[in-house]
Image (cartoon, rainbow, N blue to C red; front, side, top):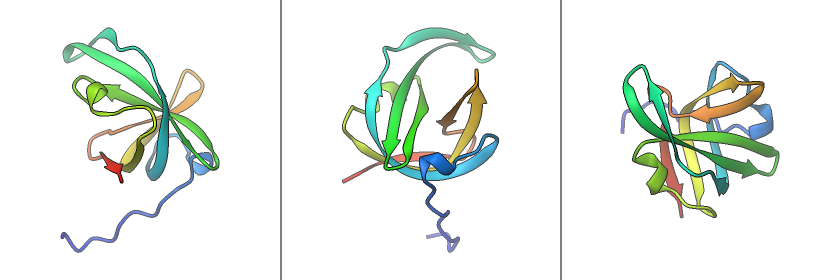
Length: 103
């Protein structure tokens, strides 16, 4: 325990670009992984659709994370980074975010 307070839980509909967020949602879809080249070299990326009672958002999964999650799982994203990508909001782990499967 670090003694730090837990970040407040947000609903998907309340998320805004260029901010950290903590959400709980269910994975309703995962795209096929695609090969991309980033500034760090070649990688794989897939998009998962997350849904809660307020709406949906895309979760970007990179590399080995693609195989860790499945449709129907409820996940908690803590300190994820929300950004606007081509006019749509999406969330990723950013620098300090974590994702855990909820039971």
